[in-house]
Image (cartoon, rainbow, N blue to C red; front, side, top):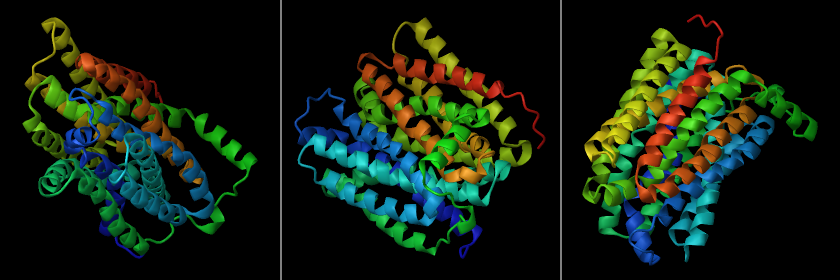
Length: 395
């Protein structure tokens, strides 16, 4: 690899950042988009701008198979143009259906970049070392929620929402050029032929691996609550709590907490290992979700805004600390099919998780209780999955 470790982490984080930037920068302009397409003031249809992007992640299945055959860089260089071109189309879409289709394709492009980036990390690192590197990547990656909403508001103040939608494509073009400094991480002798028997045997090997299913399931169920919040965050803050002026500040504050937590996670993994760290994080997450649900039930109404975010902010941050540990442990036994395995993992994580999250978002019209139930229920399921792993792990 021509580039040093620090640049590799920065480039990987920037590549993965395309997924976050493709969402976070647009959140402050949902109202402007709704006005442009003449939607009712109380409509949450614009949440589909996020949902369709997440659903495009199903393309990881195809890209994962192809990256195990053609190598990581070939698929990476397909993903960037898909993301850039569809982003331009979404920015100037004549109707919401066209925009949603373009966002789906942008999600496909992001999935190619995301999955090959994760597979590239897995090619180079394994186990606790991968969890530590992924935590460092996520620390850089998670500064996106801090600055992206502010950047979206600044661009909107001096231009239109169309230019806000164009910004991720411009950033992607820069990262695309930067990515040519990478060398291929999958040697030719390790590549797998593309044929039905090989795909079938690889798929069976992956989905029958209990360790993979356990940790992919953990990430997926927690991401359902995460995606439901992200897609509806502006609606919750502006409509349910009546403070639209606080949206970017709350979003940025949570982003800073996420970055701090993932940075702390890298240190915890160094000391305790990925599995022990993950177990502790899940216990804290589930406890906070349970306390918020109990408070909501006992108070008999929507919780106060400060109580809601006092609980939700650390759960969102813990979610992003849990993910690198979970992905590292899930992919640990599948190094020979890292591309396909990371694609299946990503499909579980993004497509299924976002689909479940969209169902939760639909019911938020009546209040935030469905989201609170999703946080706590996801925590309980993740707790059961993680603590059902009885293997002895020596750090």
